Length: 70
Image (cartoon, rainbow, N blue to C red; front, side, top):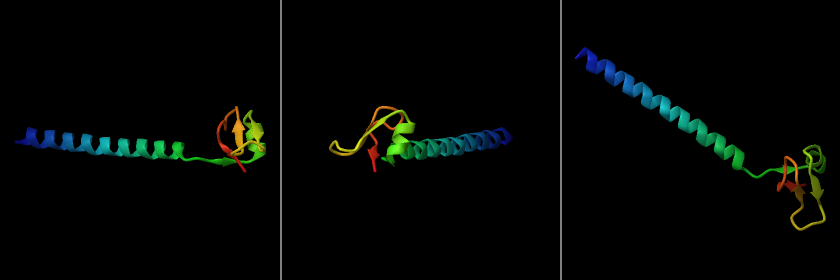
């Protein structure tokens, strides 16, 4: 009986630890996929070129490639 209790406690602990890790991964993925707006100076500092006159006002190249420039 004692072994069954210990085994159940180990399984429960592993399950709760797994839920915590999957929740953190989901939060990280959601944070990375959110669109951002950068300033022209941030675009330049990231190695890109702000294309203000083009449709959509996007940063071309660098760290912020494809992000909207405001």
